[in-house]
Image (cartoon, rainbow over all chains, first blue to last red; front, side):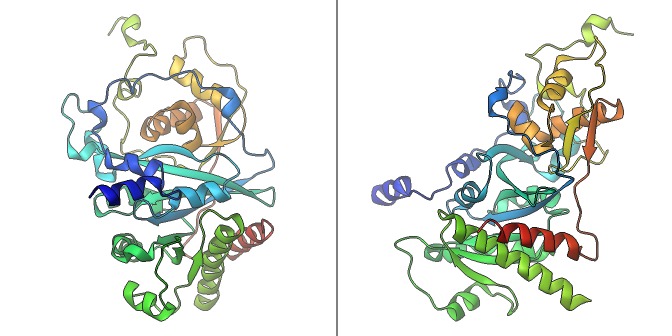
Amino acid sequence: MGLKASSEISMPYTDGVDDNMDDTHGMNGTDGIGYIDDMDDATVMYVQPSVSGAAKILVVGPMGVGKTTLIGTVSEIKPLSTEATMSRAGARIDMPVRPTKSTTTVALDFGRITLGGELVLYLFGTPGQQRFLPAWKDLARGALGALALVDTRDLEASFDAIGHLEDLDVPFSVAVNSFPDSVLHSEDDLRSALDLLPHTPLVICDAREHASSVKALISLVSHLIESVTEAT
Amino acid sequence: MTDPGEERTTAAVRPYVITRGRAGSSRDALPLETLVKASGSRLPPALQPEYRRIVRCCQGLLSVAEVAAHLGQPPAVVQVLLADLIDWGHIVARPPIRVAERADMDLLRKVLDGLESKL
């Protein structure tokens, strides 16, 4: 429908790079990818030398939910884009000529926050659709947890991502990214619609606002700390 | 044995040729958040340009994901080339802080304090 399409295009929060994720492609079939262009040194912002380690948090959700927006809002670097390879692609990745489904990649946006001068936190935006889930396994390994972004105008679109976090046993917190035309739901309604466990935090945020996005991350980390405290 | 000239790659070589087909090999891939930096060791003159570009990119501390993004290369390729460079002593890595079976409370508190200081 024309109207729907144009309203989507004008949405300021739509994840720009997410759109590329529809273009999953066989790497072997892509021309020009072999060029290693000289990089522009001016764009590289190095991590402070005082940093001794890195940790990561995943930001998951369906296309257009605001993952890249949130990452851009809190990141100290302009979000970068790379790609994740579907786990099972490994064995065949260098087979010549025939691009197969096993060689698909997905665009992956990420940002970075230096915390306290000694630790750097990476935020990886991870697309939630069912067909991208194989890419999650490697990304999820070692992640502190995940922030699951939800758009109340299309709750169902978030089911895959939340279900997959549960399957992979990645602790998470839910952040409802509020859009101007979002319908207001009670927290109870949202919880039951998303089938959340009672202890899973649910916060409302505006991915365009720094403090709001940082608070959503804080809700996740507080939840992680509580889970550890309870376990011990 | 092949002519050494054949072994050399140019900038127009496709990434999975550069890694001689090892991308996605069984070797554990470096996690994307691993921090890497050039060690400052002298690079052998015969080192392929793809390796040199990575070393040049790593003059400061960067994650594997950032190196891949800055070079416009698939992480699967950069992971293999970085692993070689680490083996050869040209790159040093600071492994990511992993959440062990028992999550590291100290790490989580540092993350929480750090985030709260951003408000």
